[in-house]
Length: 254
Length: 326
Image (cartoon, rainbow over all chains, first blue to last red; front, side, top):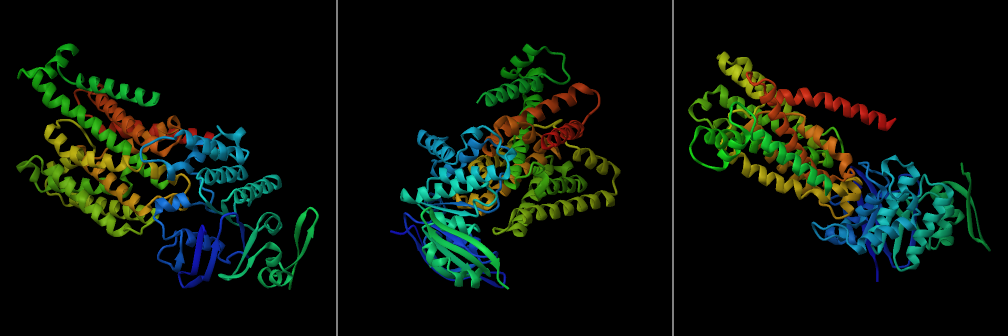
């Protein structure tokens, strides 16, 4: 069973070929890290997979083929721009994630409320529940927006740099939430620049370079010295230790 | 729910006050019984054919403007958006001005609102052609600005070239906006458009809630953004076109009412829709009572009073927002 299959996905924005022949399959139980330098096409890959770039892409995505309403119950999406337009409470904002499940013209049912409570608890937001979301710090807002996608309770979750700007404890806690979701049979596709966290918490890494998928596999197979040199232009330290894998970028290669 | 109850009581109370406001020495009880009893007495005629349509129009127009304002602000995610932004009120005004200038109103009294509605429809077609199905919120704003500017320029041209000073004075007074001397013909003309517009705008609630998270996240939650924009344009145009056609330009309602009520509905865009409809109705009713009670002998225009009250209120809101931001 697959939650998302991309076949020969090409995206052209303006005159620029942003994605080039991407094929991949996401299965339940996977926590996938999407890595690559700035401009490699990470955001475009996720948006195209969701069908948000209709008209600019060729190839196929199983998610994009669904109707918008069904897609919203199959995959949740956290964009990189952390937009909260109005001063609503944290709980109200998280509850927006239930919109795809609510029959027209109804308010939150008990199962919706429990999904909201569960998402708030998972992201450690109980103390902030009644605070106004727009008055929180950037990192707190990011956690609230992650909780919103959790409340959507979809088999697949796509998040664009969700842990950027979080403090170390919350970065680790968030990656653990994602890994936990994967273990419970969901799948998570998350783009990130912290390769150390990616190495520790992801079951699989996708490495993008200039719109092409250059590596796809377990972290140890993707974060090789050759790949780090060719794609990121850096050297790195990588060891499997008793406390799990440790990855540390070291120097910029000339 | 308490807010809904409170607003409904407020609108109902102001509606009765509006019925009792104006020249006539009859007492409140006599007036209201005359309204119910159709006995062809002068008081009954005044109540049924002058005061009742006036109060009904105040409710309809206020609700339309409040609702349109809340919907525009929700879609653009900007508290400064207002119903006039897409250029429909400017275009409807131009239609009315042409009807006055050409003398059509003298031949056929409903020519004015019909010409205004016709122009509003033309403006909608133009805005759909400009902002299109694929357009973004920015193209919608730019198209609205262009149409407003064009309608304003053409209105000025008509005034500029007007050979008849009486027509020019009529135009200027009409543009100030008023509910005086309106009849049931105006109510029946505006009502179908407004009901259609209300239906379209109220149905947007869930989509506007989702837009709190931005366009990308909202689309991924199943929102059809191009359909929402189309419904918004048509709904606002129907509401504002009909309101302008029967009452002229009445500003600030669509801007101030959603702003006043946002905090009371917890800033939820969907709840703000119905709250602003009720709040708008209350505001226009109150202003229309005030124009009759403050200067009964002079024909104080509703739009003028609304701007006089609305602008300071808006300044106060800016001041409050600034304090919250600091």
